[in-house]
Length: 456
Ligand code: UD1
Ligand code: CA
Image 1: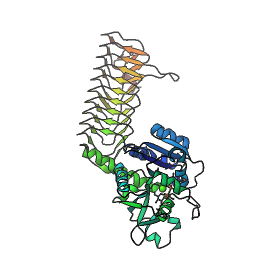
Image 2: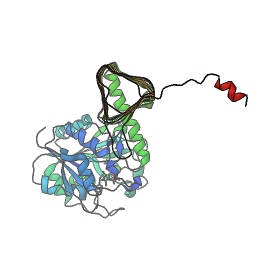
Image 3: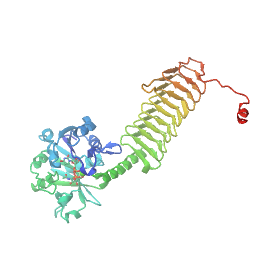
Image 4: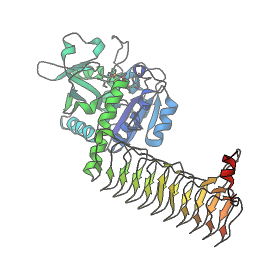
């Protein structure tokens, strides 16, 4: 699509959210609403994207980065005034401009594309994306003339009782002839219930000039939901969750109970992986094929290989290899890297550590700031003693080491290849290759002592 521009309106505070966070930054399935909007636009071939920022301008810019150009609307005088701020960038260009609100995260690129095609086919100066709402309260209503042509859009607060009965609503998404848009904006007035410059007024202005104004009615109202308060936010979350889950299921992922499975918008999951109930997958997580995740696992910004199991566990900012088993009840904290065929069993915490292939930590251990080779066995209850209250120290365990149960490895310390730590040892010195280290008090048996005590 050549000569296509987009303007995203994202300057409002979002008073109805009753929040310290600016409205368009509220996440839906883990991603700020306005970022959903911009990513959808990004999948169309739009030449320039301009985001109008105001409240929280710096934070919005930081969130969207170089996905957009920005203009500042210092005072929020209404949606028409917001669009006008883009004039220095777009005002003189020939082309078509798509205007989208930053608080409608569900409108799919396909729908924007269809709106655009309708606009082109009708040689219109403006085309509104409309939908029919069961409950239209709060939305601008589409008022059509006797011939069925769009005459104007009336906001909820300005609508007569009769107009309020209209169920066709303005979704806040439009296509405009760019030059006609900026010319018409100059004529918009603020003599309405809210004292604001309304973008929808441009429709009536163009219509009265005898220009072609069209409407494209989308079948799917859900998609056009505008998020103005926390209730709508929860609806958007539910709709987006269902959409994301469906996409994965159609791609070959089994989701046993979609209602309790939360997957971020950008996560990738390989085919034949199974998600059991209670799974939350956040951020830029990538899960391979044939994995079994859950029940009840929380995975954030992590990469999981193929054929791996994550059972009732938490995995944060970590990498897990192939054919590896984690959990139940394990906690992988950030910067942990597990190789292939690794086993992390119940009540094991791993932090900022690397574990080589075929290494096993099966029960009740803490592994922190450690570099562990392959084919190592860490016995039940063993810990890396990595912290002296001020600084953290590293534990190095080379390949084929066996650490007996309930050992303390006081870092900094190295266990050389093939060494063997006797159960219950406290290891403070390097253990040479192939050596047995025993660091515990010797056992002494006092014969007959118990009956002597009992006879007192
Ligand atoms: C708007 C439309 C309404 C439509 C609805 C669809 C207007 C006047 N009304 O109503 O017809 O049915 O969207 O969801 O346009 N914004 C700015 N600067 C401003 C004011 C708003 O950037 O000065 C931004 C907001 O951040 C938001 C978007 O524009 O992202 C829409 O504003 P909002 O106040 O939510 O409009 P609605 O009342 O929902
Ligand atoms: Ca809105």
